[in-house]
Length: 233
Image 1 (tube, rainbow, N blue to C red):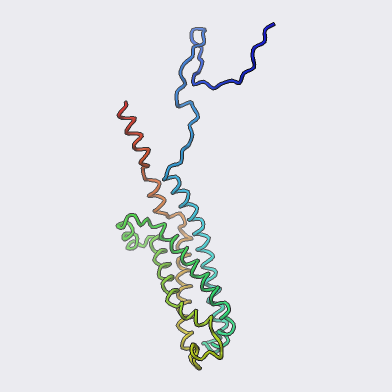
Image 2 (tube, rainbow, N blue to C red; image 1 turned 45 degrees about the horizontal axis):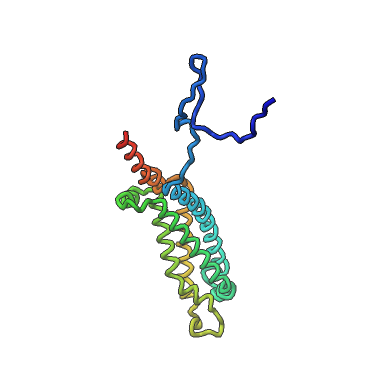
């Protein structure tokens, strides 16, 4: 008895088909081969953009809730018609830096996320979106205004953080209400802008002109490959 040597089978680029009661080997077409999916720069951009959009949506909602909580704490501590500004300073000065830093961080991420939906690569499309009240354009504008207003009151937040009854250079006697009233009003406006922006973006979360632009782009490598195929053909 003869025994065949044990060898591992090797893949062939041929397929055997029966014709006229005989098996004939034919070259396997590329359509039947397993083709590897190669990532292009467009695929990476779309994936990164989609991931950041999810993070942005979370920051939009968290920022809206945090801004409402922040302004509520201010009004509760300040009392009715700003009757107890000293109580606000004593209770809030330890929260001034953490709260304002978190608010600024969330505003920055939300603003970038909102502008990331507008597709700034096409200026004409952006301007048309502002005039036609496109949800993505309106949201980016509201977040940008809220960010500017928040930065305008950063000096007051620093003074609140450094509050001390004995520090008359930063807090002269009787100046608490005069300094705190504009600061509270600006934070109220920021909370309203953030709330409106969140309401707009939550009704149309699928509006993303940048993703549409990325999906419509032609990859340079693929276009060159197609041209080479046409030339060889």
